[in-house]
Amino acid sequence: MRTHVLLSLAVTCLVSTALAQQPVNASDRFTTESRVYYSSGPAVVNIGVFVVSIGSDDTLSLKTIPASSQQISQGTGVIIDERGLVITNAHVVNHKTNRGTIVYKLSFAEQFGGETVLARLLSVDEQSDLALLKIISGEKYAPIVFAKENDLMIGEKVIAIGSPLGNSHSLTSGILSGVNRDINVSVARGQEIKFKGLIQTDAAINFGNSGGPLLNSLGELIGINNATAQSADGIGYAIPIDQVNKILRERLRRPNVWLGVQVVDENDLTLKKAHVRSPAVAQGLMVGDTIFAINSVVVNDLVGLNNELTLIESMKEFTIEVKRGQRVLVFNLSLPHIDTRDTLGALGLDGTPDVVRFRDEFGRLNHSRVVKVKTVLPNSPASALGINVGDHIHALRLKVGRARRDGWTPVASMAQVVQLIKSKNFIRNDYNIMWYSSDGSHHQGKLSVAD
Image (cartoon, rainbow, N blue to C red; front, side, top):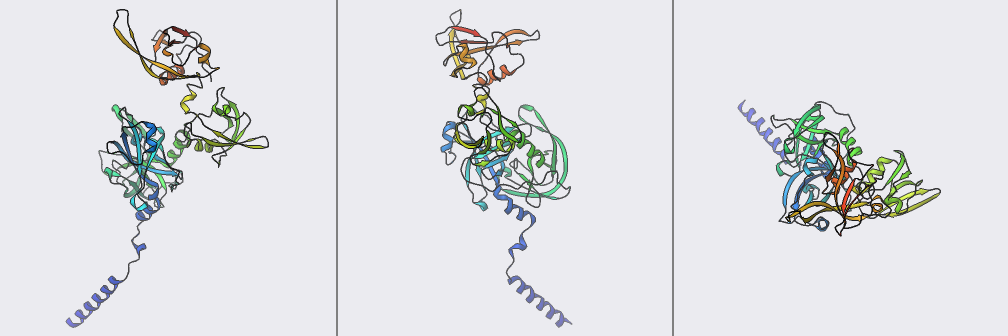
């Protein structure tokens, strides 16, 4: 009996050794998570936000981030368009500083080339905690595949890719624990934002995963990771794909340039109306033209038009193709920033913050923050008043206080000027602007606001 047992043991050992020497099929090692990582990972980037001590115009020539720069934020992003559009969380990229210029560095995983590129911030929606970046290059990139809306299953496997604690392109997995979760998240200055309808998952989501993808077992994007419950383990949250699509369509994929025209409706891109100072009309377009392509990309509706105009930088030339009767015309346009719609468009002037110094009635040196006029368009409300380049705008007249008495409100920036003029308390039927000419003379006038 003992001989039989030893013989069986010897045969077993020989078989095991032979099996161990057989080549292992690599496909046998691929889990759902690894398949998703290698299919969707090329669309995921690590985002580093830096403050660099150079002018904003010089950032385009940067090849690497200077060693003297300071990193102020870090997170993850997802490529959603082959031309380099990247979606992420607003809290990752939306920062202000007076210590330099903010630069966004995006890095791909080493398995997918390890390339490092720079990006510019296109748009931010703080309420939804989403933002859109554009990679600064002419290259094409592999975009993520979006899942169908409202196609979630409680208990299905989900995978998160991100850069928790700076560990670039880390993968975690879990299940979809719940849907339609409402949570309050603390933000800057003690404020809170309430997020509604989030996805809940037990996949590990930590600092650095923010803005990264939550994927299903097919590698499709079902959400953007944005929060974790600090008081509990294994509870993370993501913005579902239906909300992502809605915010992209309605708030993020909006042009940063001012075309100055209106179309017939969302499905008819025939120009119905043009602003009196429309940049597009000034460069050749006419009411009645029908837009059908931007930079040779065909657009069929307003959503498509906005998607293409989102990629256009202010004062950078691009082509727009229109149908005018039986003819097809191509125009090379350069459009100003969208902010000029409320300055040069509405008022016919633009300005920059400035400080004027003077001596008061007692001879003491004092100063006042004002807006120095840098541009005045001919045949505009500002030129009709006699406002000139170099003049200083000191105040606008509004109804103020509980009694709503008329009063002069000092202004210190064009953003403040626009905000006050848009307010319901701005005096429109009487003197409403106070300015000083370069010779020191004082003026008041009625500034009309164009639609």
